[in-house]
Length: 317
Image (cartoon, rainbow, N blue to C red; front, side, top):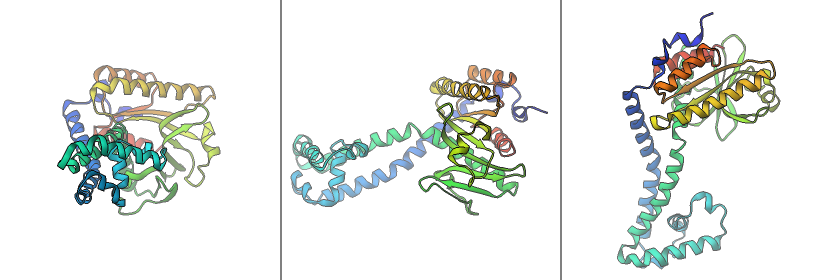
């Protein structure tokens, strides 16, 4: 039986990320950052409109609608605010007014907005550190759904936040933004794919896990059963070549742990790797692992043909 990776790879060179796709990836990241920043800019405009009614910085305390924004402008993140009592928040706001807004004179409203955006910028920066993985998951999900729909298979999806499964709607635009899992049946039996789950028997988080069961049968007991796993994979969406080696080291370690944990139980589920930034040395190492059977499939996330091939392989296991 032909090795699955040979359906879309000819050599290690096939895995390498081109300059053009790196450039396109950085543009996509910039657009996503702007999309995520839009609500913060709108909040800042609303804050400016409300705060402009104040004649003096101390008057800002009289407007109940902007008290949360004042705490943010004082440098308190949303996460930190959850751990502070109201007197602590008031102390932070008093410090903002005394040390920064009053010295700004007639420009205190602009100073307030600048400091609000400074804290919100930190929030955005934190979320952007994980954006590569989020965008990679979106892209792979869309490829899997595309294959299942073209092949005429029914599919269910797990929505993040609700923890409930539902039939994938005919109009499935943007479902990948809040999707945590997929379930389908191609005739070999029901299959359920989950993202980012810690495998109990070796206590490591794995990016992609395919189970031999339907969504309704996927219990905690099944997740704790090694023989229920059909495939496990690592997905690295970072496009920056400077971080490629570090991402691969993390993925390689995870894949080795997966292989060892299942080998101890005399099991060998399918393993695969999908990455956006793959340099020459990294590509050669992945290719060698494929040839030696230490990895069953791999693809470059930026190559549509490779992504389609891996998606089809995953759906038909």
